[in-house]
Length: 491
Image 1 (cartoon, helix red, strand yellow):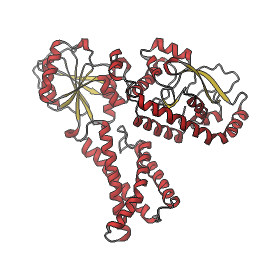
Image 2: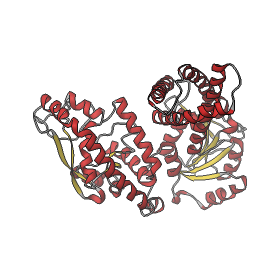
Image 3: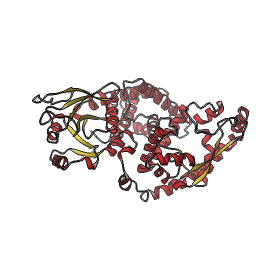
């Protein structure tokens, strides 16, 4: 089974697609009541393949391939139902609008959805319950050092078992170790809220358990116990959370000696990023940027992206321009003031520019302080414009001028950006890219105010985008933005 999360997602999607074709074959047999000729089957395969591609896009947009959802939750049931309703609507439109498809598969579509729905649900259930939950296929993780980021990771792994990782032990050189060889180690368990707490302290001479109980993590402080604890708890991956200065020569020699048992090693920022898809700013330093950020390597993609941005911005303005008078009327009827809102923002490399949007707030009594969740200054029509992201459409002008991109870090006001840069390390690095209308932070489902605490978390997402900027990530952000607009959760 693939252990890399992206490979696992691809594996799940591949099985989903294979089940689509299996369901199509079974549906054709059920409808005709006899075996199928190759020509007849191939004719349907040709016409259904574009449709299946649309289904896959719908499933992706809805989050079918996120590994933090399980099949026994109410949200997953809603997701499953929404996916099939959307796919059904698209299927009907495809066959009854497409002039090339000379088939009207009313009964076939019904059979296809019943059979595919059954196969898909059964496959996902077996994958989760019989495969992912099987200890044989799960990845055991040991942590060298205990930090706040480690506790966040353990909480996440405990809540989302589909990720396929189990925390098995901590190495803490500051622990009060009373036994030898790890036999006097402290066992650590997770409360329901995910906090790491000590629940038992074995005395010297007691036997260490060979298998961890569910949710329990061993804690050791003796360097010589690391090898034995790895073998006892079936650890496959060691995450080094301690800083370089915290690794004693004895500990480094012990870790180096583990190469013969084929255990893998990762640094905490890399593992944290893989789990959360954001960068832990408290666990990185300047060397991290030198090693992981290479803007020269992405210059060809950025050039293509800039061209596509301008083409799409021009098309968006042409399509939306007839609706501008209606939007302007809605803004004017509810509150006095200009139709457009203009404000200075910080662009690439710290250069200021004037951002333009449809006005969504009242002018009277407005001190133009940063927007907060549930802000009373937002009008009813303005709330609609925000939730559907319609208020962002005029920013197409900023894109045409080369000041913004469709996708990138959200631009901030100069005075706020300066204050945040003084309080938060590496904040200025988010300005290495063009700001965007939407971005990785905006689609990750959290409301972030300009406060220091919220901006730190927002910066984690921005640095992830800076490190991983690519076509595939931009497509993911684009799809999630569409879902945000459909759900009217824009900010």
